[in-house]
Every structure is written in structure tokens, then in C-alpha cells.
Length: 516
Length: 69
Image (tube, rainbow over all chains, first blue to last red; front, top):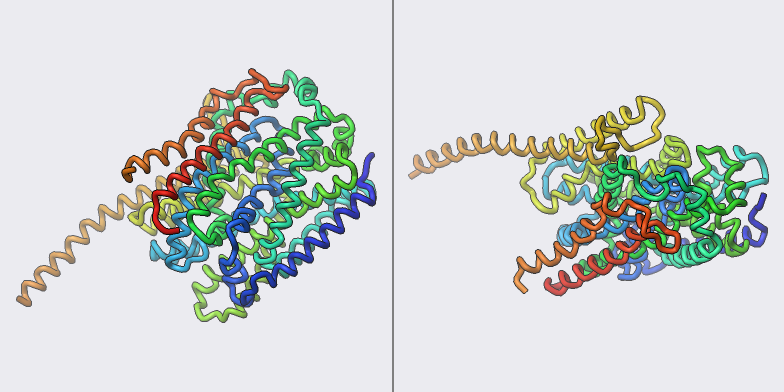
């Protein structure tokens, strides 16, 4: 069985040290007062155009891209290629929604989506609900990033002891590194290192894709899978599952607090729009990484390596295994670092946006006189606590199906769509119906998850329908339930308030008349 | 350009990739293959390029029509 050579490990460790050093140095980059929360969270908005572009692009090459999608394509088939149309379309939605949110936020000084909601709806309840939902939705997404970090370490430590010990060690190390990195750096560090991270990642993707594709026999892989149609295209029964997966994911991405934070840190609205419109191109690397889940079938030594893991976790090691068996060890060490920090930086950014929501939209809501120094301490400690809670989500689904963690986060965050995105278009929706819709949507989401998984261990986010329509992504149904409540609630409110609005007006006229 | 026709143009440019990718039954098939890659896969990869061009044009047109930043 092949292991990463000392040279490969040396490259990994040396570059990681440089990376951490840059994170520490990054705190001095355009120095601001780090004790102030908005400085710590979105870097005081000093970032230049390119830094913003890297920050947004950095969100795309994460454990989702490197580990979760190839894993699911490997284990299940082409339905998990949904990640490609998702990436193609999400930026089309972003370029409409985010510049508008940016403009309003700039005028009013908003830092989070919940700030915006509180501003237009005048509902503290709705803003606090959206903040809580944002925090919860990030948890499984962070868990997925930790899965990415731990799968790289597991492959690096493979063979030094039995697999259980190696996996536990990898998990503990991933957690400690992530927590320390987040606590020490804040987004300023994470963003500054994102430039270095993106350089490493884009290089890794290019090198890995070119070398693995050159060494793989795609036709042979498909021949191995011939007769297994679900690896060639989506089966007719899954058509509705496919479009609902990618369309809902595309709608969900820019509702996440970390994505909003990233967009709001742009300097200029037009640059934000242009850079977002050009991001689908980033998806090409993702498409090839997804295809690794198929190419690996033609690499017998990588398949033997994967055979040493139980099928419940095997898929997560597809990309690391292909790297280990096709790249020279020093390059493999480099690419492993790319995947590792591709989990670390996004997880850190997500935890910081959770902490930011907690302090500015929940704690301050009840204790407005919180002093800035204390606020920063609460945020720093909270970010580590959130990372710790996220670890608990890791084993919610078998590791091979860790993409479900991202989909679960998507189902949850989608319930904030009416309050956030519809709030950009209209302020005529009744605020309490938005709150009610959000709660009903979440209730339906949990209920559908339970039904879809037969009230047992969660394995899927697709729910079967009793017809030839086949399964659908649960996020779609939960969102529809949410929107129905918002619609009916608003109509009822308008009908009722029309009646009551007339009454005081009459009283007013008569009062004026009396004065006359 | 008039404001309404501008909105229509930008909307259409944005919507084309959605249509191209939402017609799942239209592209969920194996042939024609390119270099051993089934149609299903390369069709969607092609849309990554097309979406970049279409969204990019929409963004540029939109930005030019607006004043300020």
C-alpha cells in the first residue's frame, strides 16, 4: 500500500507553516482596530477588488468540491453532477441580488443579512429568527469542511496505525488547527491567506486535473461501469430530483451568512456584479473533480487502496487516493495542502460569520450597551464553540455521503429566502407571515427529512413521491410550504388591515371636522 | 437604450443558462460522446462557459447603464 513519502509530508508541513505565518502577518495588513467587531469580521471593508474576487472564488473550492461531490459521484452516480449546473446558475442569481443588498447595506451601514431584514421589516423577531437559522445552517456546512480536512490527514497517516486510530487522530488534529486558526485570525487573516490559499488551490486543481486526466483512461472507466446507466446520465426517474437539487442549491448559496459577508466586503457594487457574473468559469475544475469519481474506476491501485476503507467512508478518499497514486510525492504533498486549507479557510470564514451574527444580531438585540472589546471576546469564543458543535454534525451522515451535510444546510438556509431575497424586491409582505413561513418551512423540512429516511438514521435529502415524478429535493417542498404561509399571511393581513385602516381614518376626519 | 428594453435584455441574458440547464430530459443521455465523455457531462461543462459569457455580458451592459459605482 502506498503512503505519502517524507518529501511529500515535508512539502505539506513547510507550506502550511508559511500559510499560518501569512495569517498572522495578515493581521497587520492595512491595520485597523481589531478590537472592533466590524473590523474583525469583514476587515473594515478595505479590501481591494481582487481580494474580494479571490474571497468569493475561494468559497467555491472547498471540501464540497474536492471531497464530497467526487465521493457521491463515485458511490451513487451522475445525479451528483448536479453540482455543475448549481455552480453555473448560482452566480446568475447572485449578480441580481447581491449588488442590491450591497447598495442598501452601504447606505444604512448593515453588516449582515439580519441587519437588512430588521431595517426594512422593523421586526426584531424576524431578524433574530433569520440570524439563528443562519447560524444553524452553517453548522453542517462547517462539518463538511472538517470532513475534507480529516480525509486528507487520514490518507497522509494511512498505514501508521489501524484505520480507526488514524481517523480519530486526523479528526482531532483538524479540529484543533481549525479552532486555533479561527480564534487567532478572524476574517482579516482568513482573507489575506485566501490569496495564498487560492494560488495553492488553483495550482493544485490545474496540476491534479491535468496529471490525473492524462493518467486515467476515461473510456476504460466507463467500460468498467457499462450496464450501470446511472453513471452515464441521470435516470428518467431522477429528473425532478436533479433539477430541484441544483436549482435550490443555486438559490441557497447566497443566503448563507458567510456568502453575504463576502459580498458586503466588496468595495464597489459594479465590480461585485461583474466578478460574480464571471464566476461560473470556476466550475470547470469542479466538473473534472466530480469526474474523478468515475475515473478512479480505471485506476486499479487506487481502487485497491480505497478497498481498505469501509464503503460508508470510502468515497471521501477518492480524490486523495488518485493524487497519491498519480502524482510524484512532492506534488502530492502540495495538492494535499490545497485540499486541506480548502476546508480550513472556508470553515473559518463560516464560523466567523456565525459569531458575527450571534453578537451583532442576537446578543446586542437584548443587550445593546455591549462594549466593543467584550463583543470581540464573545465573538472569538463563540466561533470556537460553533466549530466544536459542528464536529457533532460530521457523523450525522456516513462520510461517503457527506454532501448531504451541505444539502441539509441548504434546506435550512433556504427558509430565509422569502425574508432576504423577497425583501429586496418588496416591503409589502407582512412581517409576521415571514416569521411564520420560516418556522413552518423548517418544520416541514424536519418532517420531510424524517419521512424520507423512514424515521431512522439520516441518509438522504431526497423525498420520494408516490408517482412517476420520482424523488424531489426536500428543500423545494419546504420552501413552497414557507412561501404559501407568507402569501396567505400577507393576504389575510392586508384584508384585515384594510378594514381597520378605514376606521381610524374616519375618526380622524371627524376629529378634524370638530376642530373646524 | 430605454430602461424597459434594457431590463428585458439583461433578464433574457440571465435566463438563457437557466433554460439550457433546466431541460434535464433534453440532455440526460450518453451520446454523442466526446473523448469517451457522455453527452450528459460535456453538455453541462459547455454551459459553464456559456453562462460566464452570458452573465458577464449582462453584468457589463447593466453596469454601463447605471450611474455611480
